[in-house]
Image 1 (cartoon, rainbow, N blue to C red):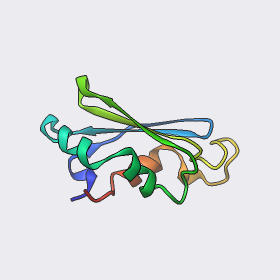
Image 2: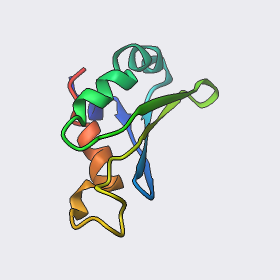
Image 3: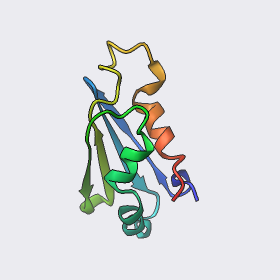
Image 4: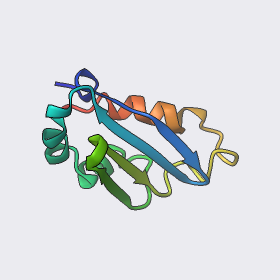
Length: 99
């Protein structure tokens, strides 16, 4: 199953850092997402573009996670020529992850 079948995402960019949230459509899927979508797995999933650390923040009160990917935007949104590596493209890529 792909993440997009049970979750949605929002994103943000700042400098060379991308924030990608992961929010299940149904709160009952949150524990399974926490188990299967680890920071290490996200780091491996974006290994071709993420040159820095991936940190996962858990927001249990709203059943959401936020992944902060450092050194991922090719030097930053305003410095990179690769428009498709930024926020919304990365969240759509994450939602294609098989779990």
